[in-house]
Image (cartoon, rainbow, N blue to C red; front, side):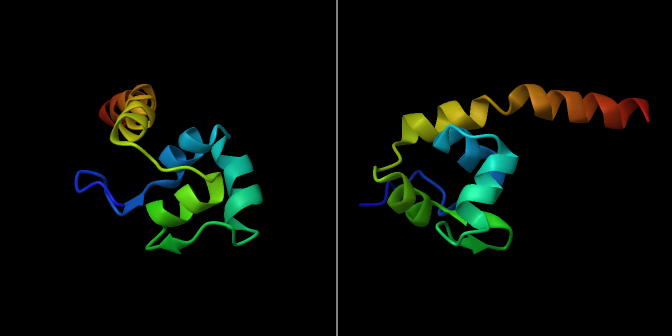
Length: 82
């Protein structure tokens, strides 16, 4: 069952964190092989859950999303200085 608070599609980098892979490895193993479905350049959460063989809980998603915060800060700082 889909949690109403989870998005239906997530960024590739967040999906890679949930899968325990780097974004490049996630693309090679999951996207290029067709194991995981994309919609508008985002990973469909149901297909990621099916690929991983487990449900994606809200806590798992939030933790993976928060792990992207340093990269977001670095990108924001870069844009401010350039």
